Image (cartoon, rainbow, N blue to C red; front, side):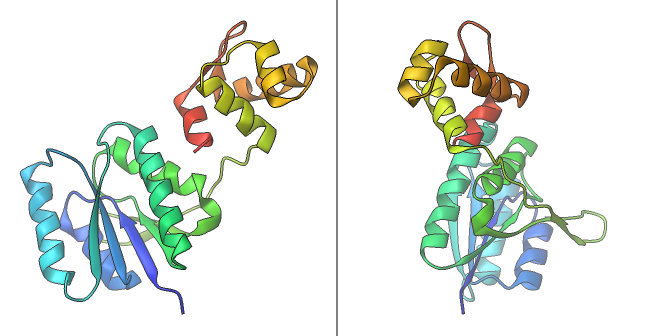
Length: 199
C-alpha cells in the first residue's frame, strides 16, 4: 500500500492538526519561508513536537508572495513524492494567500499525481475538498509558451522554433492570449498564468 504525503501551507496549528489527524499521512511537508514570523515558527515547532515521532515531517522553503515560485516548488515536491510511490494530498488552508494559491496552482500543474486538495474551515474545522483541475494545454501550446518564456517573441521565430507554419503559430498564439497565458500583438510576453501552465 502506498504511503500518503501531505504537502501543507501553515500559519496556525488547527488546519494542519485537522489534516494530520483525519487524513493520516505518513509524511508531512510544511511550506515555509525565510524570515518566518514568530507565530508561524511556534506553529511549526508544535507540529514537530506533537507528530514528529509518529510521521516524517519536513519543511520546504519557498516564496511567501510569489505564487509562480510556490507553484514550481510544489510541483517539484509532488513529482518527488510521486516518484517514491506516495499518494499526494495538498492542504491550502494556512499561510498567506499568494502562498496558498501557489500551492493550489502547483497541484493543478500535476493534477494527475494529486489525490486530493483540501481546505479546512476556520469556523468548524470542516474539510472541504477542492476540485482537482488542470491547465490542459496541448504539447504544442506548451512548447510555444516555453519559447516565449525564454524570450522568443515574434510569430516567425516561434513558428520556426516549434516547427509549425506561421498560420498555425498565429492560431495558437490567439488561443493562448484568449486563455490569458500571453499578452501582446507584435511581440509576445508570458503572463504569470502562462508561467504556471508550463511548469
